[in-house]
Length: 463
Image 1 (spheres, helix red, strand yellow):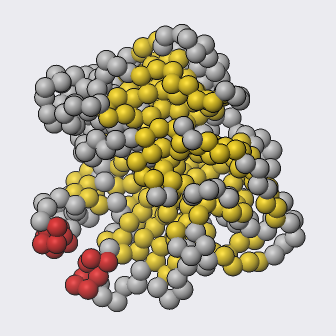
Image 2 (cartoon, rainbow, N blue to C red; image 1 turned 60 degrees about the vertical axis):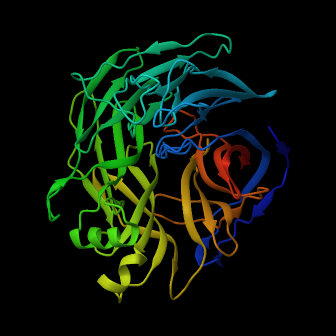
């Protein structure tokens, strides 16, 4: 593993100013210093050609911090194994001596990466979804969700838990699962999709009991030519005690018949998936009450655009803040179906309290009339002194990774460029949603520019 240790601080003054960077407006609110301490390659991933990859569990995370130790899960392709279930997961641990490969699931074959969370006692939980199909079988098949628990003792063998679901759900290798934790209370929740109808969920409390289970039914798409459930995937899920917040994107076959036929003319394929609507739901106590009615946070359905849930952060008082990206139109459709529409790319933010949407705010935007940098990824980062920051990747002129301060009203601090040797284009962070405590350390795991088949780690000190 190649490593680069560096100390490169950048300071922003506390004066209130307005600045323009690549089409993004900022307001300087307080001093901010970033110090890049570590940049290194963790592992290389051979293409599995099964439709997934190491970053597939986008709404969850494969990275968590416990004190001075960082844990990460990786995805390896098994030589000679047949897709779809031709991968296995690996657990890594990084301390002062660098990375150590702790465990590899030699007995299980799977398709998707395995997200992880940490508990207040320092234990690490890994969500696995091994196939039940024989090795000679190519394609999909049944799977059995499992959770592995590792203690802080590096040499200890993990405990293996089998979640207690409601009934006998028909799980497969396409799990689209989400894993979240409240580290201080030692509780966790796991969601796993069943076809296009719903997600099964199971909750484990701080006493080690499977204290809740149920089904999360998808929103109903009554307005489509063929009404149907709107499967909601790649969610960012937050857990605070027994309150659960779920924020995901529509993921169904193109529901507009005219657009679907036109896309088939272009691609020759019968399928094309819709990522155009964002939905949010929550419950104040998952063991006592059901999830509330779905709230549609954003939509680009009229012009075939795209939206993507970036992150969710739970305030101490229980309200939540959401981040997402939007693309206004599918340019393949523009000439025939909406020639007057114009393209734009934006990063959006909203605060939700008790299910009530606040004002949706545009944090950055690039348009055809005023082109600038495009925000392609964003994550929240919370610090021990109560600050909420936003880490982004920007493409285009003056692109790269930046971090800026944000408050609940959407006031946007003057961003600081993080001087990586190469920017992270797609990344997980050690987030409170994985049980990680707020910290001055910003940990990243993901792909860097020009090296999409290798997974890199970085540690940045923010103060």
